[in-house]
Image (cartoon, rainbow, N blue to C red; front, side, top):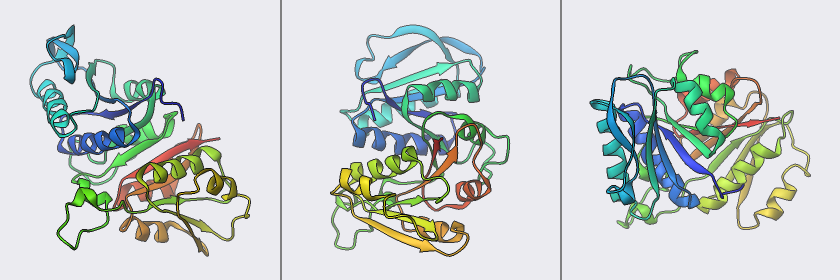
Length: 280
């Protein structure tokens, strides 16, 4: 994956869940050594403000930024994340473009797009027609959906000896693989994500995969421990079970289509962030 112009981009709407998603996105940006972009989209009343790089807040270019809560949420998120990750390049921006088209446009320049799993309503999951599923159905890049309340230690092995949680190994990355959709984009994203974290990769699939499916990826990522879990029948329950002991669950969707029923169920009920990766 090219990192020349890519970012980790996260949607901010002022909700607690979007701030939790921003915290996850900041950690992902730091792992991948990419800039972090905070984006608010919508049509709230605006006052003069700025697009800014948090590392250079004295040099601000004038644009319209929303008054009140949204501007405060953007500023607060940028400042808090800058304090937590001082070496991270953080840019906070607002656009009056509606959320779905704005996020889809931002995804074009993103390595990964990140959204919170709950909006202002506080309802669990994503009802059909929500911003999250609208973006998930059309984004050209991987979309990670982060549940509300996600903490940094949730993606790592529990600490039992009193050592700092940030030094613990990462939990496995779990890939749900359909033998009828063995896409390089999907498999490559899972392997790359596991390698960036130095985490094991667990591949859950129904029936038996051809040995040639994962062989080139094992060779490309020789330092990644790969475990295959074959499931007879529907892999959904096994993936949900695995999500309770995973740092990230990775599923695919065919380009031009929204997430299928199984993927939507995982988005609503998984116990870890879910990455939805488009593929041909």
